[in-house]
Image (tube, rainbow, N blue to C red; front, side):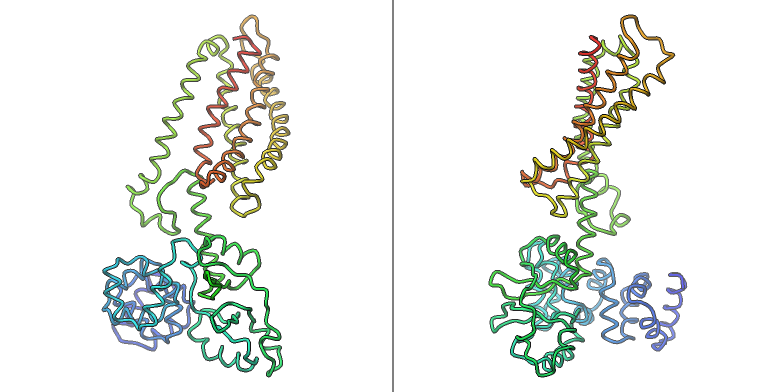
Length: 459
């Protein structure tokens, strides 16, 4: 079914009050597909469709909606209906929605919620943005170490309908301090009367609520976890981060790094391109580009200062773009691999010397290869050109080749040094790359190019 036909069919069934057809649609399709189809309807129509299905299916569909659709539902529908919607949502999705609301809108909705839900929302929204606490949910199963395997399974069976994941159950003491965990597999293979303390896993990977969300997500990725427990300063279990949330976090962080690499400021969120006005896009891009353009005036000043050299030997001007492009490419490559290694915690600021030494060796090999190629290019393309008296084509080719080789080495080192220096100064390494790097490399490249020509050719 296409989205248009689905929308038409849904409205037809709504007009006919065909609850059976609406329930079949909600239960036969994947929740994400249902959410995508429903997002074309009005808030009132969406709620009418959702009422036709079970609480569990309704929850899955609601948590598959985009933030904008949920936001419209909250602002449009009656407060009592909104309370039912919020109650059906998982705790982390509910908290994310509340972060978008104003204080006035929150206070309007709080009275319609049960006390436990109000406190849960306040707790989850109290953590700083982009911290592990801000993306965790409280839909986990907690067990006592004195329980038997049978008692634990009975408790999981009882709580499962309201939990996002129950594959892991976490063992806590009387003060809710995390002491271990068990998986469903552990409970199933254990003897029915076996006490949890005797077979639980005591070495537990966890994140602290104040940790950066990306650090927690990378831990889930590294150790192939389904969920990661989150503890507070007293080591008490306060929530979990599930694998699907970790995927969203990593995707968001990668988009943020990508846009910073392209010198785009502002908020970095997925799926917002068409929803963002052209004026906001302009503001996000213009500041860096204008600033780098002003800095780029130095390139013109350098060329102007070597005007006599260009007039004496115009062939130098023909190979300026080659030197500039090669420097930009090698510098961007170096910056990209270093930034990626920093993002994945493969290297730290203290590894600067190792990184620079490695990139220096790589750049030397590339410099030799590219210098030989550029020398051959000059000899081949300029063999029929008029060369002024006092100059030889091999000498000109050697000058350009040496300048290109030096540019490759310096551009590669700059590409490695800038991100490492940014980390040392506690700045985002992605911000210094790409356009900013290209501008710096262009300036240094021109200085190397003309200085080499002046020394070797005497112009």
